[in-house]
Image 1 (cartoon, rainbow, N blue to C red):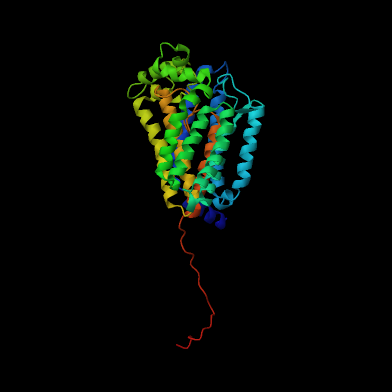
Image 2 (cartoon, one colour):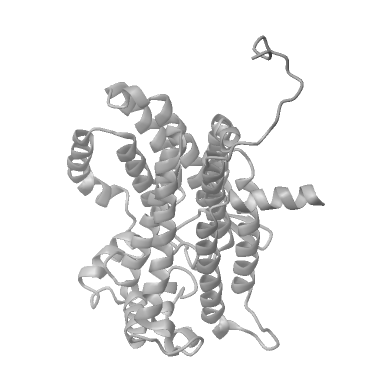
Length: 392
């Protein structure tokens, strides 16, 4: 029993407890908001909606999974990168063949139906990609600016991005692009490559608009400029803006928002959950939510700066970029600055697969923190040792 308490104490001491508290607090906030946004769809006799139940299970299981992964040496996980990469490709191919599209997103067949459960494959592939790409960058660390290295890294990036695009999940593809650019930047890629990439993107953007985007996706962009002309595509964001504005500074109160409780804003429990936060908790609640999220990002960056290994440093930076890009894209959608492209708000939006996969990545960050932490020297005593100097 004494040994158990000793091991437990050491486990707690080697855990980034501030980051753990931030994650738990953010998860609780997220669960409460999902519960509030789904009260309007409760049937007679129900006390909690299915989405809220799934969110609670995913949050509790995710936090436990985070702690379990944190106890595993990250070096063991990172060395499995070829297997992880192969599994991710296989998972996306299976999704490409057997994927289904829920009613809310008919344009995106990026989900695997497992009974009554929908699993979004790209969420797990994001974490796998962070592992494989950071290891690839470590292998090419000393020659990252060679053209041959850029070609190899480009091919590596295009495999998951291409597969995600083929499933119709343009939002996740955009996050993959941000993750790639972020990891390349922190790995030391020369700015000239970024400049050339930006120029090339501008040059091919007309072709992307004509041949990559569907008519539905084009209308989403055009709705930002002329919402009155594209009413069907803009109504969700316009209602969301009304909900946000109605909250004022302090909000209407938990589970008291007219828009939220009336189910007026479509997907208010998912992509548009920030509008519910704004209505029921006001500007103050929005700032608390964003403060918690960016505090998590800040802590991950601090861990990245202290890690010994280049690959895990890049992994942490990639995690920070992934979470940050999803936050900015989601908020941009809710504020009608960006088109609706199906990006969830981390820790807040309903969705068991996205939430659980996020915790897997966070668990690896905890492992990196734990096994890079300077441990105290163990006190020991040697006895009955004879030396030539014993007489002195």
